[in-house]
Structure formats: C-alpha cells, structure tokens
Length: 328
Image (tube, rainbow, N blue to C red; front, side, top):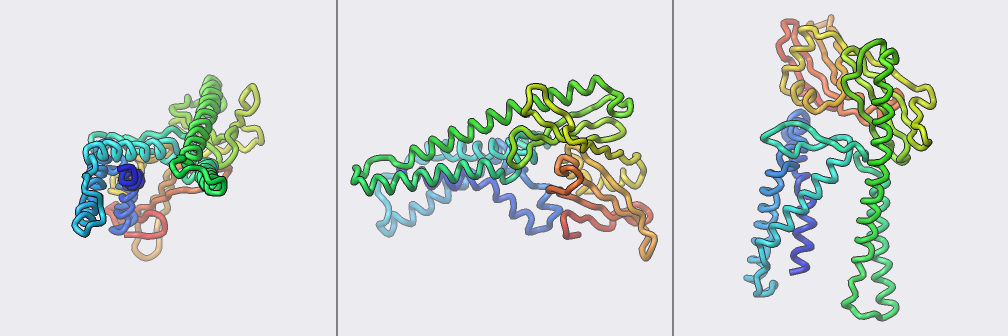
C-alpha cells in the first residue's frame, strides 16, 4: 500500500502538466489552454481519477501474472491522496508570477501570489538539498548497520518542506512591504504624470528575496522600477532605473487584434499588457499588432516574455496569429 501510494502521489502531482500536449496542435492553442482545465479544482479531480484508473489497470495486469499482492489497495483513499497531490501542484504554480485558473471552466480569471518565478532556482536548490539529505541519511544508515525499518527519507523530506514554507514566508513578507511602498507612492500622483494609478504589482527576482520589480499602471502609461525591501524604509528605484511605457490608443486595428482568438486569450492572461502596431506597406498591406506583458521585463532587458502577435489584412480581417516563434 505504501509503495502504491508513493507512486500514485508522484504521478498525480505531475499529471496536471499534461496540458502541454495542447501545444502539439499549435503554439496558439497551447497558450490558450495553458494552466487551464488540468490546473483547476474540477480538472484535478478528473486527473486524479485518471491516475488511479491507470494504476488500477497496472495492478490488475500485475496481479494476473502473479506480480502483485492479492490484498487490493484502498482505491478510494488513494483517490483522495491523488487529489491532494494535484492541489499541491496548483499551489506551487499559484506562487509564481505566471498564475493559475483554479475555477476554470466556471471562471477564466487568473490568480497568482507573485512570490516566486518560473522554475525558481532557490526552491529548486532547497528541494534537491532535501533529496541529497535523504540519500546521505540512507548511506549513513547502511554504514552504521542501523535497522532497515528506519525511515531515513523522512528527515530530508521534512527539511525540504520546512525550507520551502520558510522561503514562502520570507518572500510573502517582503512582497507585502514592496506593495505597501508602491501603494503609498500612489498618493503622489505627480509621479505618474497626474494620472491616478489603477493597478500596482511587485514581482520577484531570481535570487534576491529583497529585490522586486515594481509596476504601476495608470490609464495612460505603465511605470516600472526596482524596489529594494531590505532596508527599514523600502527604497523605490534605488538605482534610478524607472521606465515608462505609454499605452497605445484604442484604435480599430487594436480592437480587431484583441477580438481575435489569440488576442482574447492574451489579454485575459496579461497583467500589464502593452500593444504595438506596425503597418505593413509592402506586398499584402495590413497591420501587425504585437502583445507583451511588462511583468516579464526587467530593467529594459527581456527576461522572459511570452509575446504574441496578430497580423490583420487591410480590411482588419484576421490573416495570421503567432505565439513565440511560430505562426498559424
């Protein structure tokens, strides 16, 4: 039972990422369904059921060949464990600045904690440290001839779990301080050319838990700046790297691009979107509208930007959509 539970937990915790298979159809379709149904409370239940059914089929096959114990596992309890493992996947994805849609298909709204980055290196080091500690503990048990029943893997797992929770606690505290400093700056409307901010955000850096990327959005522009929360009084823009990007006017071209399949998906996901329009004068005349989200840019350098573009014909009909480097 314990071995079966371990396998089923590992599979159920990773199974929500099967939505990457949507990219086989096209990059645009894959983006629109990224972290969708399989990352929702309802979808995780179906994913957990599929994992349990898969393990049940494997168990029946192994039992037929005499390779499995005759005592059947408690499949209902394993389903509960699988669902909890799937929820842990949603929690981990919720912590980063990409976000999840836990209420899909009832709501397509994105939620994110914004205290970690995609493929967070600090959390990865802590988790690998816990795994290494488990291996070293196992080797020490064998060297000292300790009883085989000693659960040498629990120490490493406990240390890794405590380390992850501690990192989350520190980052959440610093994230709140950075947001509080940005919101306090809202009182100084002159900082943003007289426009009252409508949204403020703070996004983490790769390694430094005290360095954040602050984003202040107004109806006319989006201002970005580094935020240092290490001092007693949070320092906004300590290196003078504030940048201002002005929003494009709502033209019929941009409206047509936003109403496309890719445009709707991107604008629903993006937190601080910026659109740029490029007229096409040669050949088949038309327009290219590019979409970017400023939460993924850092100090003018592209850190990771899931960019999209929509090409329109001269009459504003859809000609082509592209996400990343591929078009359709």
